[in-house]
Length: 477
Image (cartoon, rainbow, N blue to C red; front, side, top):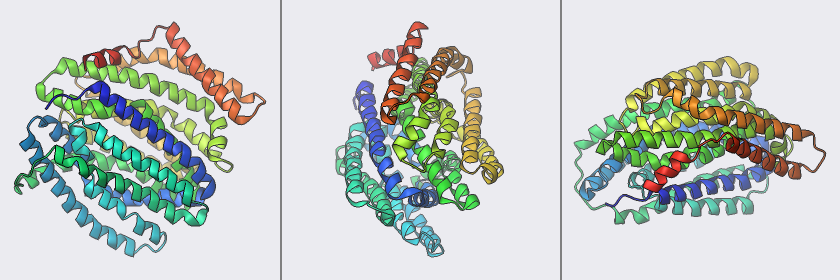
């Protein structure tokens, strides 16, 4: 099978990430005004609780499946056998969790209807085969289908969600469109797999391997979904969960811009390069990626510090002021998690070091859990935010210390200091403009333009080479 073009895949993946950014930019302001903190908080809390069941159903299929398909993509019979065996395992674990989920729902009368609707997420887990197309680097198939359903979801929300009483319908649209996109991927499957006999004795091996990948996945969930569960459990305040939900929604959008597209594409390619033992090329690609991630991440992080007070009232409307504080607290996470995500996607996962990675993530999860218990009772959602930052920092430090020369802390310090100077200057310029007496939207646009201009100009003066390695890699793709 011919190597897919990295330039094409990064372009496609970036377009999808842009769409992933645009759709919440349309729906989040609308939903925050229509269903309010109560509806958003209820959805955030129930989804966090349901996600644990989906995580167990999926095990580590996404990461393990992608790696195995990437390593065997040139052998159609081998990749076909791997696909059917791994997918069958996913179906079995999903069916088991459907029974467990039914018991959970039966004993939870509060949010009962929402929990019933969220059952669709378990079917989504069962049928999700995006890992197969990612392993083949055939991103156009997953991107096209998911893009169409995202647009459909936006249209349905704007047409049918009109008041807080429509919260259940909002949850159904969110889960139903996701499931529709997942199901549509099966329409293209026949182009890449053959009918082969399944070797059931291999399921035990796949189960063992997916468990290794599952450990860091479930550990990570402690400082993503567990935060929301603990906020709801400790504070009993939907508003605090809603503030945290909206802040993390913006942070997740910035992560998509910063590193998701690059890591999704290069993770599959580097799995292939590890199989070919092309170590020097792997190191070069990781260095190029981290330089680009720091360039975008530092800029967005300092930008959020400066722009949050203007942005939040315009975007979410009245009553969401605390989100601005959470965004400023969250801002370092963009760079911190960018480093760990790059190493996880481009070194630990492709190199088959998920067991080692899992240990570091578990350490971070324990740190996060303890800090949540200590801080949430006193600082509510702000405490959960701080706990997440410390947990991510712990993981990134451990990743770097044990990356065996594929990425060094000294290299990060070498390429980040210019970006930090430019970012600090950008934040200062934006904050000075906060006192301008003008319409909020106009002020936001001016702050964005002035901040971005300041950041880029200073990097140009300092002769920063943010795109140097990335452009070099793309030319070789």
